[in-house]
Image (cartoon, rainbow, N blue to C red):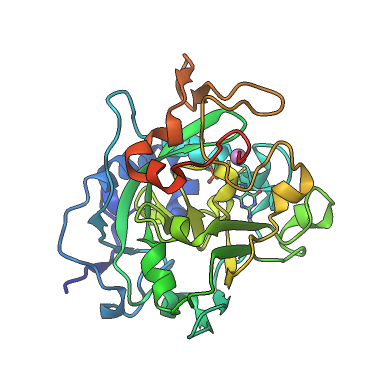
Length: 323
Ligand SMILES: Nc1nc2c(c(=O)[nH]1)N[C@H]1C(S)=C(S)[C@@H](COP(=O)(O)O)O[C@H]1N2
Ligand SMILES: [Mo]
């Protein structure tokens, strides 16, 4: 397995580090475009390198392309929108709050605990958690339940591969994801917007689905704090709130986990939250959406356009009742 981790003193277009993003946004947008053209060098085994996806300035790891299917009218959202317009209640309620208030958040060092119904539970440093895995560029649509949407080139690992390593038991039926609890660095956690920490959950087969991923980067760069550094869930056929950010704990459970938004507003945030243009939100239609950067609204697609891949998991399920 060949890996390229470059230390650059004069970065080429694809090697702009997050630090430079704040210095030169125009240059970064160009860089993000170039990053999408990343050359395949082979399967990247993070274990071949001293640091798999190092946040140090000047490092960048090559990754292999994963799922890249876009619809005929989909274009990748410009990174500026994705970095500036966020939902991350830990940093405040407004769309600009996560970018404005996450500057003091420390995504390294980072540990992840995997526990519950599995044969090999453990708490690992993030680098050790990532080490055995292949990094992939995957381009997915993300549809927020509030009706805005984006198209993001993520960098990350297969959630299924990450979970299998801990050997879930036959009794495990669900997977629970927990965000870090750090009120000193996350001002929103000093408010009662949600019951903290933020918790989300998936049925085991959903978590094991090949589309489900743990992202550590986007646009070929490490995740920004406001987008969920250093590691977040991405489940592209479900409303965005299912994709928990800044994860510190993953637990295999027998019963369906209690989840933050469902606990807060149960009639608006269901556990399943599969994107469905035919099932309205309690206060608005989900039939169409506003893609950031586009003028006209566009129709929302069943399962956010991933029906071919995921619909079979919900065969026979009442999608109105199980919203
Ligand atoms: N921990 C945590 N994760 C979270 C949220 C949050 O408030 N806290 N918001 C969710 C919602 S509602 C959406 S739409 C997506 C937005 O991801 P983005 O800001 O990277 O676009 O993150 C999800 N993950
Ligand atoms: Mo959302």
